[in-house]
Image (cartoon, rainbow, N blue to C red; front, side):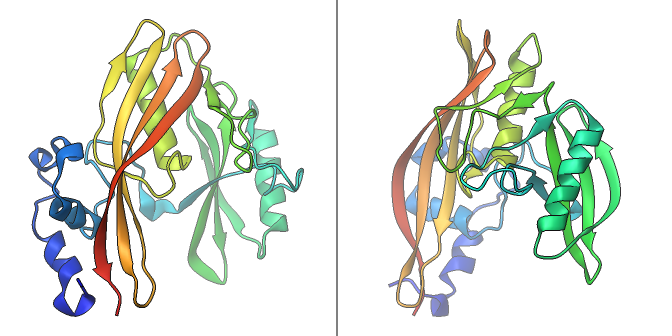
Length: 246
């Protein structure tokens, strides 16, 4: 067995230079040890993939559960006004286990954002967000009862640049694959839409006497040029054994 006493996790992490773009070539063909190396490297994924500044706080997209409008549906909210977004953020903060103060607000083309801090523990920071309805509508997707359509992309025209940004933004923030860290990025245009194939990996931590399981998978996320509908296909390619806990 591979165990912590042997320093296997740290040893694997040092096998490759994850700051070198060449290291990321064709992850579907990586050896088991290269996959283990990535799993324990601490890398967030492909260095050119969309990412946000994690030091600002944890993004949280307000939804029908957080604002207490539903109990059996989890649907992310969208609006065209800052006031509606603020009202939802406040409703969510009020119904939370503890209230986080609103310390600042901002907006992008994608969302309204309200930065909230728990005064008793200032490092507890939530970036309370609401989708802008002019960018992304997720009203048809219930996380409790997932449908094939993940959302509808609103900007027009849909081109290579904005389709890629949308897909990678959603990957980073909407848990298209739970805990999946992206290993590759490649957008392909067809007559009807844009599809990005993302090879990804995540680790299922083992308990005492059980080994970690490292999963390698592939997702294809598609944006329809005409309707803006966003769909995905996901498959697991293989699993390898990681550090064993004993």
